[in-house]
Structure formats: C-alpha cells, structure tokens
Image (cartoon, rainbow, N blue to C red; front, side, top):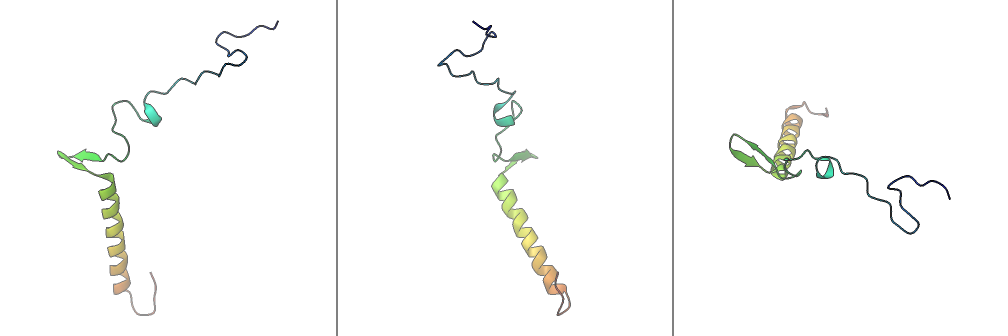
Length: 75
C-alpha cells in the first residue's frame, strides 16, 4: 500500500477545512463588521447614511454645475 501523508483524508472522509485567517471574512481581529459605521469625535456614523449623503452631495453639485454652464453646453 502507498504511503499516506499524515492528516490526509481516508476513503469516504471529507477533507479538512483549511486553517482560518486571523479574523472572520478577512477582517482583522477586534474590528467592527463592514457596514457597522465608524466612530469619529465620539459619534458613530452609519455607512449607509454616509454613502447616501455622498450621493446627494454629488447630485447637487452636478445640478449646480449644469445650471451655471452656458446654454448649449454639457458637463
């Protein structure tokens, strides 16, 4: 019979799962999950609210740019 490496699965046995990295889903230990928001200056900011605010500011800037452009030109 051939030599079987130590820890190798036998016939009918599922292979062992690879070892996990330090932290679940690629996070470093002790970090909040993505989407939990960030703390700054003693306040917590929701990632969803920050993203929404960013989109709104971008939209308002585009509207203002379009309003200031001369007639017949595009941004």
